[in-house]
Image (cartoon, rainbow, N blue to C red; front, side, top):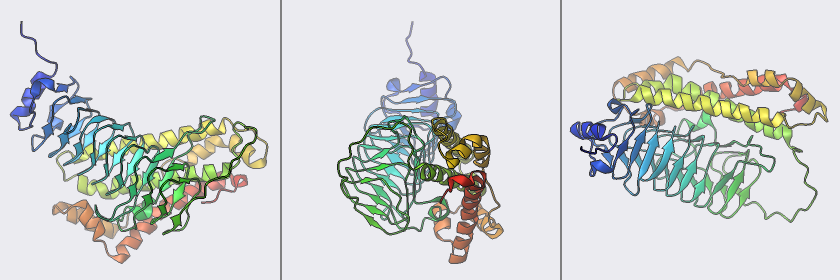
Length: 400
């Protein structure tokens, strides 16, 4: 009786259509994988890789496991994605995105074009705009980062950086915005730099062009663009622990509302503009659908965390009492806000996509008037969502 490794029939079918698999007997392909969603053009699957999940998509030019075995489960990979080793589940990586060995990527993650990470990086519900670059030994979960104009001028996070997203109370209403969606999608903003051996205590919001010195911990918002931030070393503080005190409750809620509002703006951008370009690609509609699923999941997670926080509050002032009483109304106000893209922009992008022009090139080629239109459109979505929530709980005096 011949013993055949699991998935060998699928491995052989992939090699027959052009996928390069140097050592077929070492590759494990799950029964649920649809090999029609794996391109036969310039795809390389190195020894020791595991491919799982019915939603998995591997586009042309992808390379898996060049440095160490790589497992992907229900991931959607755009053209030319390189995952050198590690584990990724429920993530969308668009054209040219890459991660070195030791990657640990959990659901809800979106890496846009040419975003990259060096070795041993952990991501979860992380959205990186094009060109954003992460160093090594980084934990960067529950955030969105934009900024930069190319692979030479990109937002960067230095090695050994942590986004602190979990409090002593077990609270995770801590998602941070590095940059923003209304300006960030234009790919013309100054890069953000977070120096190595440091961290950010979420939730935090920073402007474009922010530079945070190495070895420091960012604990506060950086509201203006182009600021050099060298946080002082905090003096020792000793006082009794007061669980669930939430001294800065208004700020925490404001930052979470702004985060969700930016998700609304990004979802509108994907549905109305990115769709035009992704629809032209071999597996583009699947990439678009997966990205929208992840944005929905991120929103649900953020709302869940707000509910959990409110459940710990003591109604000791008017703002907190109002938040407790009207929590369901707050959640309703955090539903997706949408708005129509400028008609000229849709026509321009649709025509360019139909001619085979690339997304990055077209977006960076928009003129000043078109860029203003994008920022006003998406900024209006953000402001509408913020105002919707502020009107529900005026006593909380939310500030955005």
